[in-house]
Image (cartoon, rainbow, N blue to C red):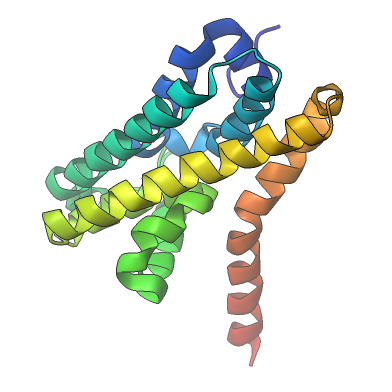
Length: 201
């Protein structure tokens, strides 16, 4: 059964185009937080090392898709964002996700646009919060370009390097996906523990 949240199946079914669409949607749409951006890039890098995907187009078009996704997220936040904070909780909308991203944003400031790329929930909501807060558009765009390129190239090239170093690593796709996802949500877990400890003092 096809699972669109499984990076390996997604790549096999839709190839480079599927990767590009997913990278855009993850940061450019409100429901992007459910998409497997980190693990998708990592697995794509491994497949590129085995000749199943073209590396250079993957890096170039993947970066462009990530950058454009954040741009769309920014304008969504600027035009629609304020209404989200007044919306009631629903199956699709949870204020705690926006609140987590806001805390991340407050902690790291402008650098959030770069750092949030490597944190699952923040990657989706940080550009929207930048739009809500009406961050200077040129400043946002500059940091967005830097962050998008760093994120796509670093994770993809790590997968590419490991694929060359360990030719049989593709046999452990599920285990690798679990590790990548764990690292991407680790900052959220650490922050939640820190806030819990602080609240008990």
